[in-house]
Image 1 (cartoon, one colour):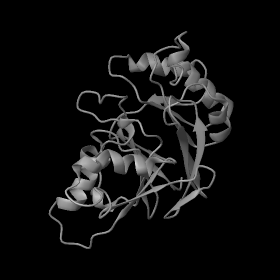
Image 2 (image 1 turned 90 degrees about the horizontal axis):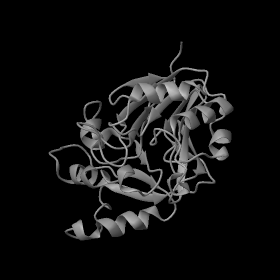
Image 3 (image 1 turned 180 degrees about the vertical axis):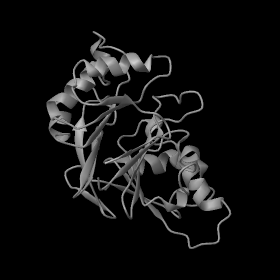
Image 4 (image 1 turned 180 degrees about the horizontal axis):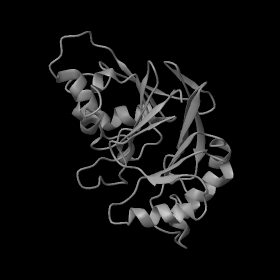
Length: 257
């Protein structure tokens, strides 16, 4: 089988990193591109087990909750201050609408002069209605159901595709967006559906399976999981509604598409 895309789970934790782990961070690689989806607490340290952080082609942020972007701070610090003799390049970081200003304002107290990010990171908002080109990868977006504006992300090249749900509750828009994808990386923050509508910004595993089944995806990987939950039970719940292969994300594991 010819491999076109490689997904590596850098961080698979929820709002707080699990023991020894990291929050949301997923590395998608093709022949010439290394794209990081989200950059939550702990991700930059874990990323270096797989590649130098200076070799990231770009970062795409799904939404501006801290567990999905906060390691952009040590990322910038490393780019600025770690021993390095090569040419300095600004790494593009694509943020949701309004995200570039939000992150710049958030980091302003940390800056010794000027903008905290500007010298090493090129913060720019993406337009969710328009695909991005990052190297040889096409990146597309779909709004999903969460507590703040949040976008699922589809990364593709002619040979295959990966869809990352970001944080979402049950949402038919995700079904349409993930249609026929090779791998759906989907959050399962809840062990089961709660009757409280205020918690419907996240998914239970059976709901994740329903989305995957309706979208006819080839493979399902569950992520954003609290360590207190039984991962095998979550997988079994997703298998009750999805007829394809299911597993829970393991930090450090790679998937080939």
